[in-house]
Image 1 (tube, one colour):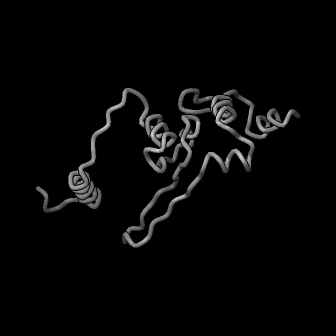
Image 2 (cartoon, one colour):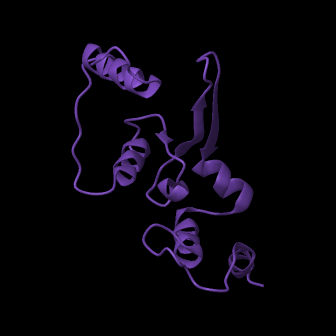
Image 3 (spheres, helix red, strand yellow):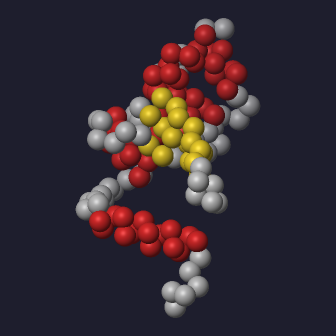
Length: 129
């Protein structure tokens, strides 16, 4: 055992090693991890939330890092950075509008949304058309 570890297994062992060496604390939360991460980001405890789920903004996240990946060689990384301020400024979508859109279009808590209603229709509602 241990002689034939996969890359994932080696990565996990390395992360556990770092975790111990950096004296990181465990955090337990009776709810969605994404909700806690968004709260920590909103309060300035962490710099960003790493998730491919944009529901983080509905929970109050300020900065979201999506499509986080590292090349197989480990020499390059890629990430997309989104901020709630930029979404609000460029698309006129504040947190309340994002929550409304999530419910209407479908989200973790309302997966089907409202049948027949798309993002263009919701944006028209916001514009008063």
